[in-house]
Image (cartoon, rainbow, N blue to C red; front, side, top):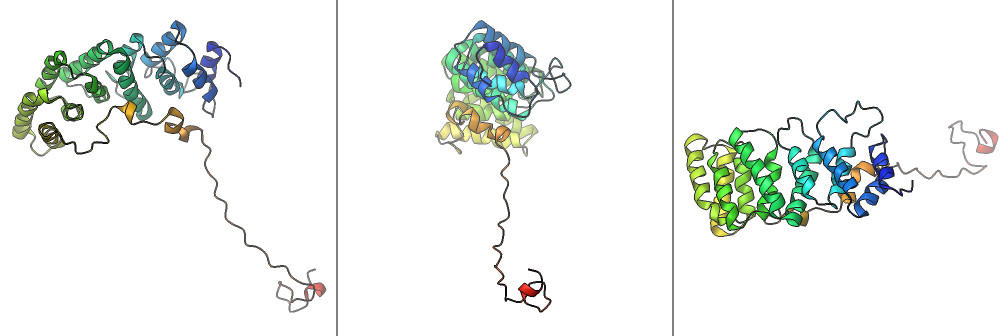
Length: 278
């Protein structure tokens, strides 16, 4: 199907179907940014886990939210910051693919918008730490790669003060990957707390490793200590399993030996082939 308008692309993405709407996704990714596109992306991402669109909605493609998030890579806008936060804050039932795609959007928005995106992401992380939220806000920690300026430190320190935060270990790892050495004093306070109250848990180990990486400048897994935008492949490669048909491996057929007219019949009768099954 040849897509020629934004509305046609929206319809194709949202239509229930077996195939991935590649043409529609590419059309929107390559289209100049418009209010119509941004408003649609903001609405869909904001309602990713509501029942406005779900598997019971007649004719609606349940993967559409993911495909719109793929489109959003090419249209960074301040209007998308809060919708991306809503993918994680206050969410109970999340989706791995959408988590990973939103993770990438955090990177893109911070890179393109600076503090317009970074500060709201830090605010959401702080609120989650303060309330001991179990929502998957650890995916917002990606913003730490862009929170390395001195004016970010006060908020980072406040977040570290919430020592009971369920994602404090992930936050410590993010600080180490971003090499925010100014956070070391607060990290050591957190580790003293961990040593006293949870010395055998993963949090203790992760914070310990983060402190060592910040003190030495040597990262344990340097290839992973990069923003997502420097690690991921193109969207078609990332989501190839959605649209590549399964490979059918056929069993090679044995080549049959030609039976001559005067050869013994292969049926085992003992007669010549010409006198039996020919």
